[in-house]
Image (cartoon, rainbow, N blue to C red; front, side, top):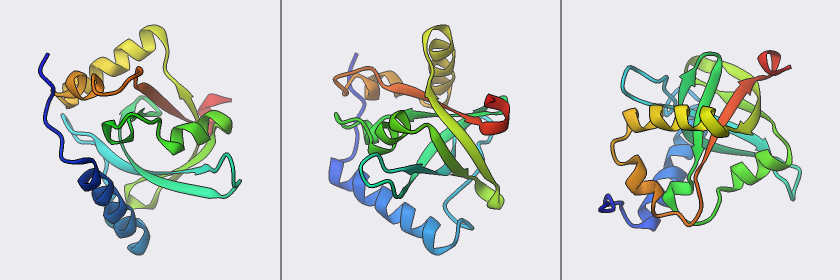
Length: 153
């Protein structure tokens, strides 16, 4: 399978830095959006830093699967695991900010087995280059389920 073309790593990192600043400076009024048919949305995830214990926020693509929000621990398709995913593994309690000012307390976990396959297939429907991008990483890309805390208990 031919690898789909990605912008240089520095461009990807710069994009996400600017995007995070837009969300922060607009207090979430810009830069976050809900998924639409055939499209993913953007949310802000705030985890607890595994080393610092301080809040750490990141903007992620996602889609909805019932009450759950689904993302991928892809780090812009770079080799390293994203810090937010390492933080969630250390402490699965997190907060999600959605478009429109909605804030949701969530528990983060990896999808495994048939659930992972089903959720990965849904990402394929949203991104035709998914498998090619994922092939750039040295390990399997985690599909991350963010369960609303009330639903997960």
